[in-house]
Length: 395
Ligand SMILES: Cc1cc2nc3c(=O)[nH]c(=O)nc-3n(C[C@H](O)[C@H](O)[C@H](O)COP(=O)(O)O)c2cc1C
Image (cartoon, rainbow, N blue to C red; front, side):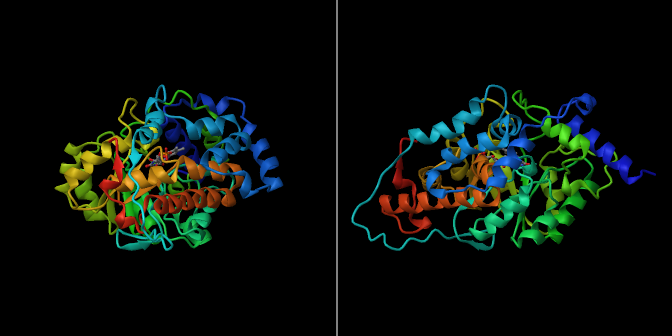
């Protein structure tokens, strides 16, 4: 019989194994950059929104506030970061075809998605370990998302448990699932999400194993190994033999999930027409075109380049979302024009979190939404539904 302390130690060892690290990191001296930098910067609380004109300004500030290791973890990706860069750069070759003489005094950004009316189409994609960026982690993010009326998706590997995040923030959350080969563990995760009120489950498909992230340091792993950071959702799950991802997962998993989950099911990580067509044969509710922000397979195409063929294959059967590289309102506009029902952002809101906690997340969301509204006005569109393929060229 395992004692709680033994369980925690095993849990941490398994995380290190999953992350491709040996338990040697347990003995390394502790990185201190993030804690020292954070406490000084956050104590000052010096958020003057007028100094942050765009997401890149927040990124710069996050770099100063978070410390090198946390920033490398957040900004890092697979191998040589070609996919990380491609995701963003691909938006630059697309141009907007603006229309004129349209009354743009009243703009609506609202959409219907997975049975819910959303104020706007900019969703917070799941990002794990947010307490690495700021001590309030996912709770700060969820509070800001609720306040600014953006939908948040909580990662399986959040530091705070999904139930804790829901009750501390009052936010209506969706959940992202990393399936374990042990379906009992997966079922326990699903139960936690359902109990927390989540109505939508994003199953991540692009992580049979963790990508080769050479620029990641060891501070996060040390913090988990020492117990300074927890993985909230796994705390009460017996972790015997547990892994956080399942390299043996196949399409059978989708059928299992349908039978074992009352939430709507969204497949996160589809990047080809072939898989979009296979997804269409299953009982699912949506797709996210995603390459995990370039953190998994290197030399992926940019997600915005994958979107058109996926949208074409899905042919309206269910909503298609896209994430990766979105940094500007115009990027959101272009993705919507190419057929996305909504978009996800990852790093942008985490830069806000790292820079200023809850207020920084709120600022990141505010910047993107106000850019989108202005871009809609300049392009001559008054609702999200009006943003169609005719509004872009260069694809
Ligand atoms: C630090 C970090 C952690 C992430 N953690 C997860 C995760 O736990 N689950 C998941 O499905 N995707 C995860 N992602 C991928 C995001 O959900 C999203 O696909 C990606 O960040 C979008 O690209 P962007 O950061 O350029 O906006 C993570 C991304 C980052 C940057």
